[in-house]
Image 1 (cartoon, helix red, strand yellow):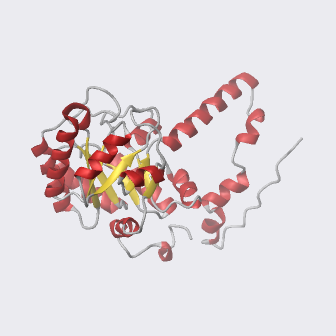
Image 2: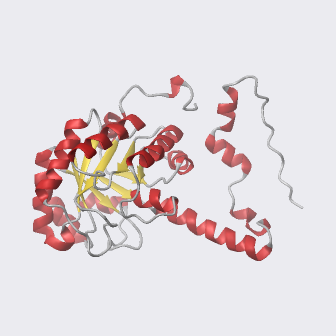
Image 3: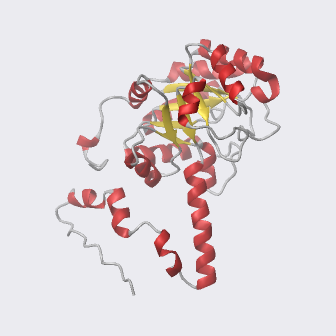
Length: 305
């Protein structure tokens, strides 16, 4: 059912649907989906929620992840992904785009766009990927004020407080911040850039009863762990934030090189999603059927010679 049909809408708020997923046994795996098509493919693969990474959104715009993207630009991605997939979406809220009032504006804008959850981080601008060096942190009190503002503004949005403090303040600093953020109204904690199994386990031991999110990004400080391993470490959610964009970008890079070299894409056809499969993924027929005046499209047979 296409998003244009009222019957496709769920009356349960997105944040409540996200909480219901977390209430299930085990760990919730949340793949990054950098656009609507990726979100549909994740849904079709069986995932029950998806993630919008700030790094993936900015990279898809040809920009670095330095806090450049705006609330309205993120809202465009949220609407795209939620409409396309119907899944509850966790959104990267960076530093909240300002101070307390800006954070409240972000929360209301994200909810209106369809978001289920957001995470805020305790860096200051220009913020960086959590796996890079020389990150500058806000004071614990300033970050706690942002968390409190978010909690005050939300109707249903699930709020995750991210701390990047482990790299500069050690485990004690990260845990102290996390406890303060929970007291301020966060629903869960995201300890970023932990780099050993023991660090993940220790953080979980020191935050009993708190729902925790783990980040499994490639080319960062965290070794590769599976969803099952993170669950064993004590985590309730995990994300693969930029994975889909990295794979898609690599495929596009190869494609453009092939076209430049060969004068066409004829050598890449076997790497493409067929027109038939693409139309099935985006529910072309479902949209077309909404308007009986549109003649049903006949997909042409592929030319093989």
